[in-house]
Length: 259
Image (cartoon, rainbow, N blue to C red; front, side, top):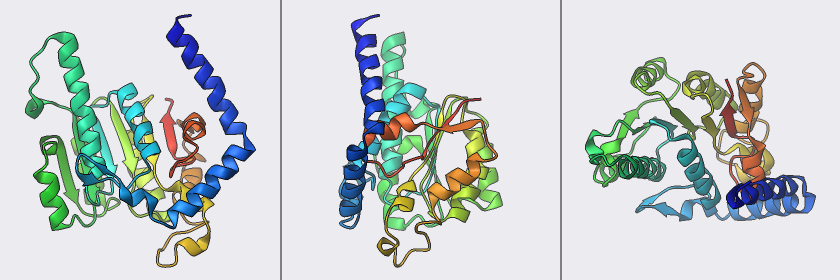
């Protein structure tokens, strides 16, 4: 066993212990409840655009993208575009790394690696900022409901040309909508890649935190995930990610496709 392999094994053991540690779990839950009321996730940017994610989940996504090396990342929910920019920048790093390893000439505009974002309402100021960003050449945006038949068909048509696909669902957080997204897009996920469902944490927060939202405990992304998994054994929850993060908006939301 190499020193690195030994270190990784020690990390796995420690992460498993964190997942079983009731104090760590309860304190993390209390912290999330406190900072969520302060809109904690709204205060971070990636390359100049608001990303609206916990930094911990951003790091987890970085690890997954580096591990999977996807050719296409499909994202529902665009908002200010920070997540699209993040994904595009990670794909640019993958291309740069492969160019260095192979000695090939790097031409980002010709890279096959892309990010596809879908949102029901891409506000003009956000569209303009995303299209003006240095990562824009890697990004395609579609405006429309992510569960509308014509949008689903369009996404599937684009995805046909890609071998390794990572899917991220982060739009409307009701049970019905997320379940429809899972049924529409999870199948695009490559074997050993992930379909990541964000904001499953809604199930673990007080109902009073969502007074003006159609979702809340009992009706949210986590309930949709559990319903979806009843009939889709090709996916499993990767508990090791949430055990490692402790602080995450996606408990039970990191779904790995195993076959």
